[in-house]
Length: 417
Image 1 (cartoon, rainbow, N blue to C red):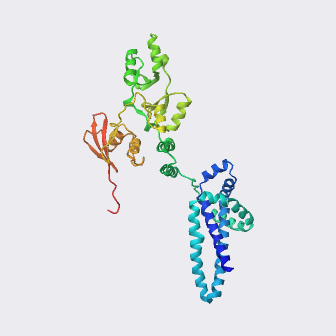
Image 2 (image 1 turned 180 degrees about the horizontal axis):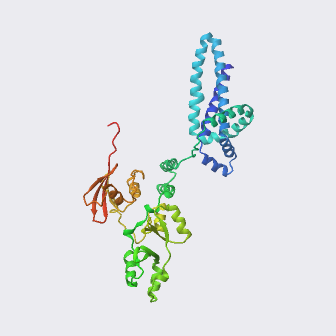
Image 3 (image 1 turned 90 degrees about the horizontal axis):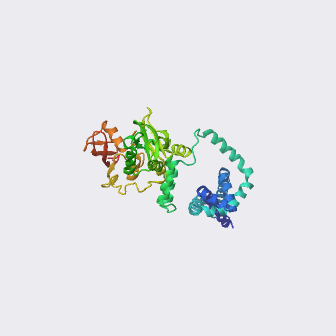
């Protein structure tokens, strides 16, 4: 009879241990989904998790009571049969029994079946917590006192952005999300981190027209660029006065009009440090498809379109005006060598290389700017400059600009070497 009671107590220990593991590792999102679909046990389980401090205290109290009881009873039994030597035997036997059958095995099984076990145990645990509440209160008060004494002033978030990105990688590996879906989620997370300065079309690459240009010249600019809208400046690109839409222009052209000022649309005005998310809200609110980006002196640093911003979220949007062959823009030569257009942003380059986007630290947005930052000048062709983690060889340049760069990723050295 005593042996049977000991076995039952060890089984209770296993239940308490499994319950602790199940409720600490169960997926709360799945429980919330089940609860929203009317699962009563899921609702009870969520309520228990909300009071997890109390639940954990109840589990630990119950587990310790049954473990102490089983060990004490085992000692009595073994002393009865083996005399004083039975104390040591009881200690050894119960230690092994509790570890294997009361801790390791049930916790392992509960970890594998956390959701099912949590749903099964939820009403039982809730009832147990209610019954022994008077016993639990002193322990809960003591825990709160200790927590206040050693509480951290800086409250940490439940989950950081990096941890969320790691979870996205995990569920992609498990096949829950397709690669395109996980890329979209990552882009959404990183969307607010980027600034307009990282995605703008730089001043030197702006295709625009002067307000006093002839209509034939403007028509040619539209034809050669394949753009549906062009920035219009007066005297200098630093003075962009409007945006000319293709449809409005041809209507004026066919009607025999001469002055395009009357059909210009007002552009939005931003600075390079404006966050991409804020720029999107501004352009949506003002119903504008193009924005002029100004430098600190009020000059034109570049332009950005609504399409440029949306591409940061959903990826490249190809249309009939985009080049089909992107090999010149970014081409992998070997495992650690890449031929890259100097206009490509450092962020996009590192993403395509499969490297962390903070792999390179630079004040510059583009690869060409980074090369000039390291060289302290506009380097000539074949010039090699080295950063901390990249070697950069200029493949093509002139006295004003770098066009193409060979990027070599350095092999990381082991600290033990």
